Image (cartoon, rainbow, N blue to C red):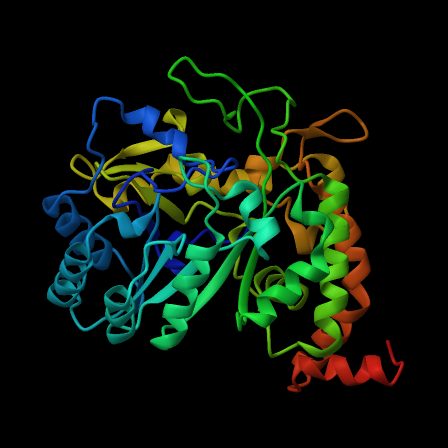
Length: 408
């Protein structure tokens, strides 16, 4: 039987970029800074109040669920004044229509103040902080435009969040440098009290564009990797070592997004990260001028869906073009992936990384495939155990006792 396609069955999700790609840092591996070259005709790349209201009213109105999640991303989001986000809350209340509104905002943490933290706490915003582990690792690539390190300012921001009891989590980029130190990496996050952590592998290819951009689009051929890219072997070793640390005593206490999503796929539930889902396409991006793109990692001219001043979010996000973009994640997989024992867990990972070729020479293989396969094979016995516990109504954290008793 052909599966029923029901795009309205899950929430429409559009990440907003109120400051465009502008940022007070200039991290070497940032994939978004160069997006400013797409908008050279707009020197002041900030979202207008008019566009903000149009977005908020449309976004809330387009939802089929009683809860609405807004995500504010950059660039550096806190380069917009606090008054902008107070306006956001005011407009959300005006257009909520009985729905529950939640907000999360991603920041590099360097501009946080007591005033910002009070606002986040009073309005129950979740704050994601980009930090790449201990100072030596973090400052390798995360510097400002003058080349000065940013770690100390980030930690000052995190301490302010903790002082004001703001809910926050950590987002760390795993690169060629810090990937070799997974234990030190993980211990750092535990030491600073970060219980929700996202580890994101950085993989970029170099391609010189006429407009000044230098990162390849997913459609462009070539395998010249940026120096900061993590290798498949590094990624696999990083995940396996990290998992071995976590599984011993931290299940149910520290939450690592990739591990949670892997377990979700193991039990047949929707994973919390789109890269491991069967299909994608339900999470778009709104730029400062109203342009809407298929995905945050596909902000390229060929993946622009339109502009909110000319089309509604529903028209763009549920268009045939965007639905095809999402379905391609599954349908464009090479034979090696379709026959892989871990297809259910990986689903080909993010399409932006599918520039490698299979052992048979077929294109479309994920560059990180070898690392993911190593990871899934390593964690399979533990995932099987936690799956059985969940399906029996018992906590998966029981896996720690089973390990201590030598049952796994």
